[in-house]
Image (tube, rainbow, N blue to C red; front, side, top):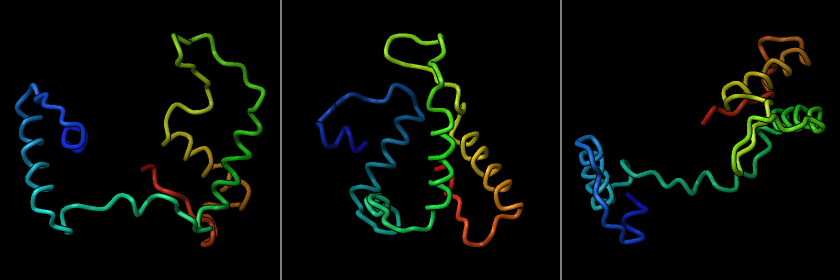
Length: 117
């Protein structure tokens, strides 16, 4: 909806659900109700130290795999590197590593883990 609004793209949704979503989003934007619309810019530039232990472990995980060769399952410009299949799987691998490192579960209270989002 924002893309359509900002670019002037006049293409329409081609199914009933898409049309209903567009109508609801248009209403939300026109009402400018702060309880409905969330300013996602608040997530940009997080400067806290809360997740540093998690990010350091993630960095260590990728550095251990820095000599991995790209799998032959590649097409065009998309490459497949078998570190993790999904964000959930990668997150779970790092949590497992942290549990091993800190002899958990549970993890110590000062080890924060970001959500999958």
